[in-house]
Image (cartoon, rainbow, N blue to C red):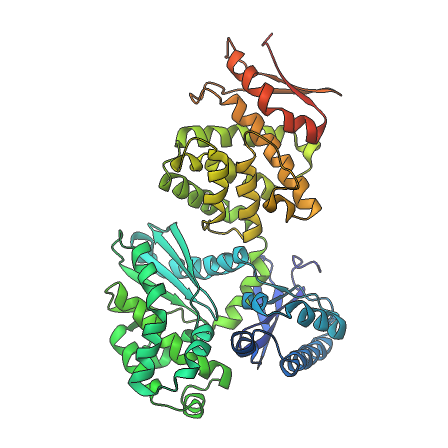
Length: 512
């Protein structure tokens, strides 16, 4: 990836979106931010293909290839190499296309570009960036209970902010283009079409109502490509629109043809197709929570997401605390002992740091280990017996803010292997990992097992650990612990994986 940190450096971001392909050319500023130099956007019916046919048509594929080649020509005019793009991503709905691999391969062959679908973790980071700016622009929101809802082409994500911090994160299989294609066969018009949209979204809205039934919302922030295309029609200046105004626009839009929508709102046909589901779904969410107004970011959605793509990959440290807070909320939901989980996490952090030269893993791996430590006993909520397997199940079927499905799978398996047998190829989730991820997961599980053995008493009596290593052993000294018999007994059963992975027997030596 080209260096994007030098001031004056040109950087580029490409997004193959649900209804358009866009490119941003920006210049890196001395403070590390990026100033937009040029923005290009052309329509392409990717979402229509995915949700209507389950695959990307050859016509759409070749249209997108042609657009990308045009963008590469534009880059050449700036003296930039069109094959060296800083970030190039595709909408996450692409993975629902049966031929998404062939589609991406076609782009790679024709344009020399490697494009990857945005994963769940990246999408939540992008929403976080947008919301963080919103909180900065409107300080009062930091003191309020605010629900931020992003309705994408195929999925909806909701983030609950309380006192400026994320306290809950949920997602739903509900989107503007997904809804548009689902209701297309109804042939309803006007008010009847609005009723059909409500009926289609009712199940997800009921789930959202249940997920947030215990909080009193003060504000609703809505983010989305379509809703941010028409803020002027919803609000007379500013970024706050009343539900009354939103309802009025939705009723008017339901009576228009697609050509009328294109002309009235100055949008392309792909956006026009999804506009009514976007309006009615956002209205339904506001009414579900009894809110009289909504906040809509004034910035352009697509240009904003491209700018955010240039920085979201560097947010790991910034987001760590939000990820850990989300994990603690999940642990609390399943009544896991917080003192034990936090202390095991602290020990894991110490061992990870002390053994950096041995394991060679990243800061992101360290964060996954901390999350796994916090959550490793959530399975006791179901039953103390085989609770490691219950923990794996609960984590696999939970949302943790800022983490993608691979991260969550890794955490689930790290937690699963904190006791009893280590990973085996006849364990389906482990078998599904590639070789590198199996090694990472095994290393992290081995460290968690050692840390958990040192907290065997559940009374947090191990506060200092001296780590020594020779060719055959990892020797631990526990200053302040006069009798480490319990820890030694636990290590005898839990230190096996560490020895298998790192080739070192774990021993607990007496303090000298």
